[in-house]
Amino acid sequence: MKPNKTPRHFLSLLDISPEEFRGLIARARELKALLRTGEPHETLKGRSLAMIFDKSSTRTRVSFEAGMTQLGGHAIFLSSRDTQLGRGEPIEDSARVLSRMVDCVMIRTYEHEKLERFAAHSRVPVINALTDLLHPCQLLADMQTFFEHRGDITGKQVTWIGDGNNMCHSYINAARLLDFRLNISCPPGYEPEAWILQPASDRCSIVTDPATAAAGADLVVTDVWASMGQEQEQRKRAEAFANYQVNAPLMALANPDALFMHCLPAHRGEEVSAEVIDGTWSIVWDEAENRLHAQKALLELLLNQ
Image 1 (cartoon, one colour):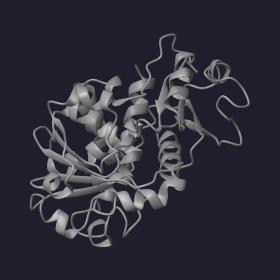
Image 2 (tube, rainbow, N blue to C red; image 1 turned 30 degrees about the horizontal axis):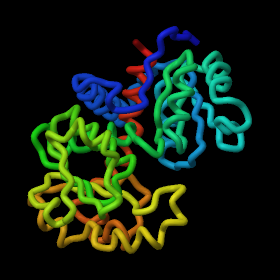
Image 3 (cartoon, rainbow, N blue to C red; image 1 turned 45 degrees about the horizontal axis):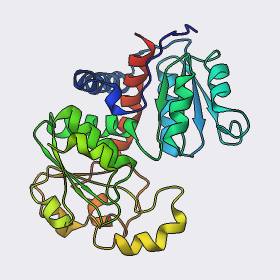
């Protein structure tokens, strides 16, 4: 292990530059090709990643763990039963101890503030694998997927339909970095945080009517109506979001070659119809796979500086 006295963290997309974002996409595509041809690429041989899960996830665990293995390293899974951030031990102490033992720490938790406190006391890079505020790793995969199917996203129109949640916030940040237009269609009361939206107001707009928001879109994206931890609001949210389903009539308003994305898991018949997610618009399976490749590129960037 080579402790970094000034570690570089990835807590938000805004922790990388537009050039680095494009570089990560390009490297992710290279790594994807190497894996498919069976060419070894153990660029992180002997390195270790601690994966802290306050919030469970199939795709996040498998993509990071498989990614570290393919890069020649090792991943250590720590569930909420193994380490409870700020409950069994102060976050600051956990950061000080773990970062003396591993080369990188990935955290998936609820409060973004926990992630920031851990990173402030870590000697090694910390990766945001999801908080209630942001989900930057998913955007690395989403943008890689769009580039693969349609080329550079600069100047394109993206439409977000649904909750102004962590995914929506990360799409706002991606619009700032990659210079695309973003229409955000949310029910009143479910808009994204104003302090995240305001710096991107030159390219991001709140368009309450989903049909208006989807018109002319090159990419339509949605997410579940109630995220993990919001289950008690399911009934209320189902009523508020009833007119915000991404379905075939809505996709027909977008450009003829428009694509559909969803970070998964999806609830067919709620935020998206089966006809859309299982149809020709959908690239969700490529999007899910690309979590693996994009995160491998990110790990290289943070650990091989």
